[in-house]
Length: 113
Length: 113
Image (cartoon, rainbow over all chains, first blue to last red; front, side, top):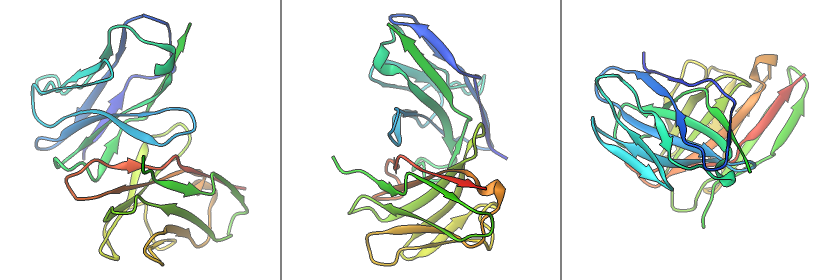
């Protein structure tokens, strides 16, 4: 079946550091890929997505590229801020609509000033 | 900005008791979902609901679980006889169309003693 594996957390960085959170997936067919973020006390929010190979999703300075050859969708940001502290979830969906999502386990990110 | 709201934020119950978790989806949304996350594990799909019936459910969603949209605004998840392993964070989500972005609530934490 489909599955998503994320980098183990928690991750702690200093402000302005470079961030990478690894995500790899196993899927039949050609899934859509997503990163969701959960800020403290809030629900999961869609951060970015990519629906086909080589697509790059980007939002709020975060980027992730759909790599079919390595079955990966790593999340990156060049310079993190304290406000980026949150839990990040990688997810996939078998259809472009992203209704039934398969999630990774989440990675807690803490940014220190 | 419209949002999905969930109540209660945290419920503690005794094993064998019935629990109802409530969700108010965004008002013009048509598709509704429940997901759950057992502590330290992945967020898992439970059930999807459209046009007043279940459209898909996972293996987790057995006869102890039911969903209902009783009054056109609330969307509830009922667990008839809770078990210890039902302790988890339960997330409600909704979407306008089956190709749109899912909006999640902030979750209801259920603790079964």
